[in-house]
Amino acid sequence: MNKICNTAMSIALLSVLSASAIAADFDDTARVVRVSPQIEQFNQPHQECHTEYVQSQRQERGIGGSIIGGLAGGLLGNQVGGGSGRTAATAAGAIAGAIVGDRVDNNNQQPSEQAVRQCRNVDNWQSRTNGYAVTYEYNGRTYTSVMPYDPGERVRLRVSLNPRN
Image (cartoon, rainbow, N blue to C red):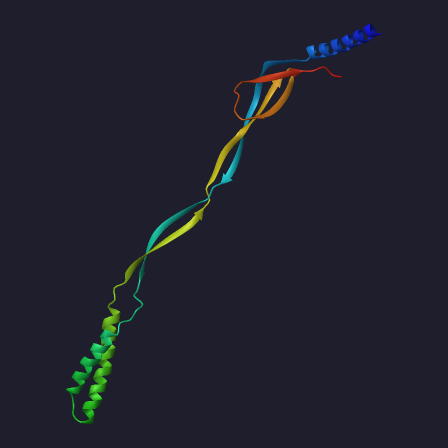
């Protein structure tokens, strides 16, 4: 009985070993039929800036011209006429002097240039190759695989043969 068991185990072991002996892996090459780059487009926006110079008027109005013009006009008006006419001429001279002094002081302002920075986002589309779709023929059949590189005219293959169960 022990001998029969050993024989059966030997036969089973031999059948397993013979099946794995039939399975084979080997290297071969195949003819490349077509290679198509797999291209991805992506946007990498960036900011473009430039400086513009804008003319601006001074917004602050001075009162020095009005005061000096009013005093000068009042003195000149006081020199004209007599009595109540003198008072009216002084008042009219002060008013006219203040108006002229204000215009002279505030209308002769030189415009100033002010630097203004202008920025905007600009699209920046770029392309990159993510791999290659390689179509090749092997043993009369056509296959397609995506590879990280262009293999050229021939592609190396790792062929694995296994028996069908």
